[in-house]
Structure formats: structure tokens, C-alpha cells
Amino acid sequence: MTGKSGDGFFRSKYHMMLVIAYGIWWVIMAINPLDLEDWALENILVIIVVIVIWRTYPTLQLSNASYTMIAVFMAFHTLGSHYTYAEVPLGFWISDLLDLGRNHYDRIIHFSFGLLMFWPLREVAKEIVGTKNHWDDLIGLLFIISMSAIYEAIEWIVATIIYPDSEVAIAFLGTQGDIFDAQKDHTLAITGAIISFVVVKWLARMNKLPKPS
Image (cartoon, rainbow, N blue to C red; front, side):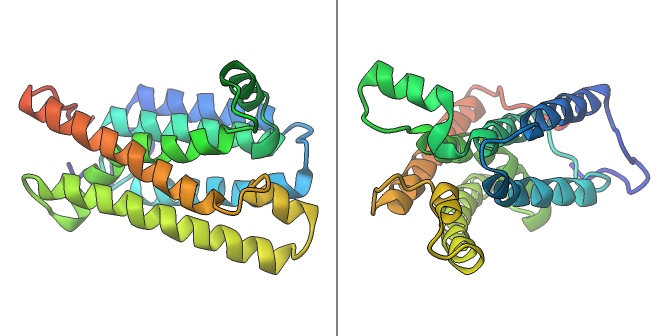
């Protein structure tokens, strides 16, 4: 799976299309966000992901499926950063449709993190850690569990240090009055990862796993 350091940007037109599409989406969502301070905090994640991909792309070759899943997840997150997670219209529409009583867009994102990021992380495990057989799947699952927990802790620390006792911190955390919000978010991320884990096992048995690009 390892590419050569001279591969550069981009290895394929498809990767370039993903970057351009997400870039356009990000610019649109950066226009007049509902809460500018919350938008800035939420985009810390975007900056981190962009830097990591930029630094690893020349030497770490993931599949097109992985880059697509990363782009889709980041697009969902970018939508949430524009409205704040508690005010995303899609979340209100789902809440009204299912009579849920609150905006669950943040729950969707945490579930999507486990569902969509499991595949890229298992490929990273296979490449960086050098795992074989079933270990890459297990480490990918453990990555999701640990990263989700770490994110919840970092989210709380950032909110309390930068914006203590403010509406910005509340918007950033997106708890919407639920004292068990972090636990539920973490559980949904794990649930999404387990679903992907099962799907990957089924695809492997059917010999239909995507190959590196």
C-alpha cells in the first residue's frame, strides 16, 4: 500500500475531484455561519485532518473508498460547523419526522464517525502498524473507540478553557441539556464502527474488499 515519496499531489484525478468538491463545500459553509466563534472552534478538526492528509499523502496510499469516506464525514462535520450542531435544519427535520424531541444531528455525526472512519483507520493500521489477517480490523475498531473518547475529553477541555460559562461553549459541546451527551455520542461512534467491522468481515469472506488506489 505504500506509495513513493515522489508520487506527490495528486496520484489520481479522483483524489483531485474529492479535494475540489470538499473545498467548494467548505467555502460555501464558511459564508455567514450562524455562530462565528463556534465555527472557528469546529474547524480546528478540519485543519488537523487537512494537515494529516497533506503530510501523509505522498507516502501513505489509502484506497479511493477511504478518501471518499473521509471526505463525506468531513462534509457532514462542515455542515454542522456552519449551523452549530444543535441548529442544523436536517437534524430538526429528522426530529420532527421521528418525534425525537431534540436535534440529533450531533448523534448522526458521531455514528457516522464510527461508520465511515473505520475503513480508513483499518487501512492505516495495516500500513503503519503492519498488522495482518484480522488484526487490522481489530486495531481499526480500537482506534475508533479510543479516538472517540479522546475527542470527547478534548472537546470538554477546549470548551471550558477557551469559553468557560458561555453560550459558545454550550454550542460547541452541543449537549442540548443532556448530561449524558458525551456517553451517548461515544456509544454511537462505537456502534457505527461495529457495523462497519461486520460489513468488512462479510466483504472479506466474499472477496469483495476494495483495493488500494
